[in-house]
Amino acid sequence: MYVINSDCVKCGACASSCPVGAISEGDSQYAIDENCVDCGTCAGNCPVGAISAGE
Image (cartoon, rainbow, N blue to C red; front, side, top):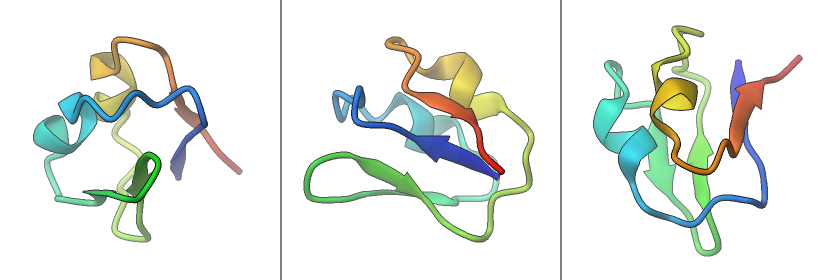
């Protein structure tokens, strides 16, 4: 599953690119939920590189 770190600037590029709607806006940054299918689309669309493959 991919994770979003604290470098997130809340631009929304990840959420709008997620094919399964697994990303939602949190208080301080966006978050990826358990519906993530590990496609990596969000990481490729993040302009600040705040998304990486988690464990």
